[in-house]
Length: 493
Image 1 (cartoon, rainbow, N blue to C red):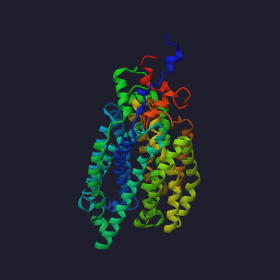
Image 2 (image 1 turned 30 degrees about the horizontal axis):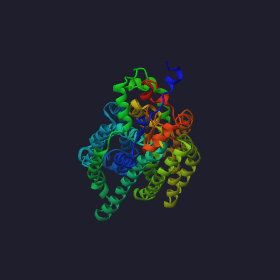
Image 3 (image 1 turned 180 degrees about the vertical axis):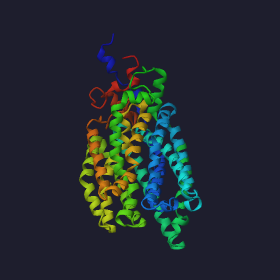
Image 4 (image 1 turned 90 degrees about the horizontal axis):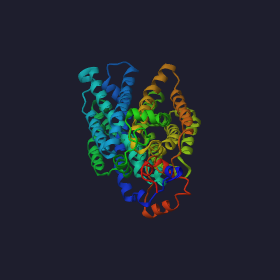
């Protein structure tokens, strides 16, 4: 009869280890990145057109209400995200990551394109804001499953020892997408105003960047059709069907109630980390165009010229930081991110007030430093908080609640705080507050670098790695078979 220690700590066989070839990893990551590119392409367009859209859709409202109503259109998409997460997250745990990611991509592309054909307030008055809000809500619903699903997907497809590197490419797509959106707005502004005059963007030019989403969306949907299901999900699904984990097991697949019941502490950690990441991230991207134009006096084009190079350089650094996290851990990277936020944010906003192009560039680069450290590990660290069977659903709940309450509302709250207090440094204090909360949450986070995902067996790139891992599993500090339900539910050996 096996003793208690044997039952609690079963051994791995070579056949248990998931082997994913590098060519399949590249296909999977590439097909996922295009979705994040599309999502942030829209953010870039909306962020850099916010002042223009205020004129287009709220021309009858006095300042500053027109701008605030337009920024609320950005915020409302985030307020809907938890609904999308609550629906699409558990669905992704049930039917698969790939199917849900295809659905979110198609919905997002269609909604972005339709914004480009909406009637304006000059045609139907303030009613023009209603269809804009509706399409932003559709985008919010789809993105409620997009990032949670994409991070889950890339984490489950990545080898344990290099998950930070591979998963960081997801946010490379995000910020390159935002830079592309800003660039399209800048290029459209240059061409239309030089050819048709200063009012060209308000008259019709604002539609062009949204309509560019049509060909981009077609390409992105085609890529999404090609990505396979993750090996970890398939293994967990087979385990659910074959060995029937007890319903009360935290490793079993749970719906919304079960996730909150068994993983509420981890969900709170995720919410705090996401809030810290996204208040800084959305300030850099979606709010800075508005802040620079309304508070510093920099033109829309000038803001784009300063922002795009910063985002491109930052994007190029993300895989390097991701690879560093594979060596030193995710928690030290989060600590660097939170610390640099608290140190750099006030000086960055002070330099920004100079208003010269060089000063804006330096200030944005300073804001980008903590953002780079945050987002480089988000796609590898956050999904690893939750077990495989409920990962998509738990990620959707934690991520979307946090982004809705604290991230996507950053432009609205930042501008409102300035209007209430008259202090142009309020956005910096807002970001720093959440950085402090994130640092506290990070201390309670389970380190996940170099380790198999919770609820999954190890993932490697070659059969030789699998054999070596199995041979040395007893002395490997990163292998804990008690967190692998596929092993713990079978007969001990």
